[in-house]
Image (tube, rainbow, N blue to C red):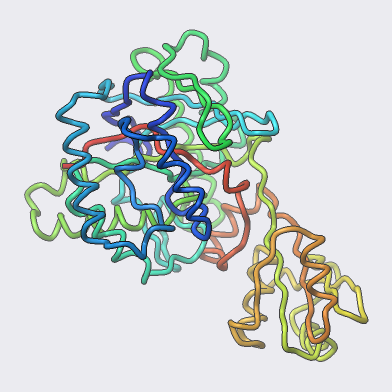
Length: 409
């Protein structure tokens, strides 16, 4: 494969089916089964991606029965020919969020041989956050016999020249419209356009140039190049990787060209203004806040990264020593892991909530700055995968919906 990110043989349901077909990522609303029951009612008897996935809110159900149902549903969808087929293509996507922001991306595939989710990975594609390996086997059980994949993986590129996705925005009116509809359950609006022919050739030339530019950039830094990073859906991509490796071992003669070598993703540019990375703060309980603050001084230095530390009697700014890491969240998390128990740390969205919790007796809140967009890829390249719960890419209703499909068997 000439590039790590490339075109795919895509399947998209007939347009009239899409409002009931597209459903949100299976790892959302895990504590709100009523959300998924509402999705089930809205989909009704119509063909729906709901029948092809396993929402995590339903994991207490009979897993074997659900997996068998998923496999039957996939076969039924293929037999009923509900899909429009677009071989060797991309889809340019515009997702209008509930606040009117438009998030842009392009659906294609990545070469799983260029991906490694291990913390010390030096591969072209890397996880942003630590993968919980215990979460992979149940997902492998779902994917290993599946005929198709549907994706909620959001892959990030660091295109500071805005040559990839933004170039498709400029020529979108010339691209054939594939779908344009409102997503169910408050997911906003989505539109997709086909990228093939001459538009595809132009995009692939820009992809090749981007990947070469990134290789040269990181070679100059003296570290292994990182071309893409998983922004959302890392455990799904890790599952695809494990299934790929299992097939490679079982059928080495098919290793080069089998569809399992690739995984479908939506690629987005981290530099896009629509990409808002919200910090996830830390609140520690059951501690002596003053002693914890005194201990924190061991990882601080004048002129370092500022973080705000709040307790019942204090509200101060500490400066983390930049020689200890590329990103402040990595320095802080290592300090906390070495100082308190895991069950004493909570991960909090929102400044106000973190401050309120930090002011409780025996607690302390650590308010982190947002991750600078130009620091994410270098941080992973130099320090490895980021600590768990480093940042959030949008609210639950803004996650990717399952829409396109791709045969993997």
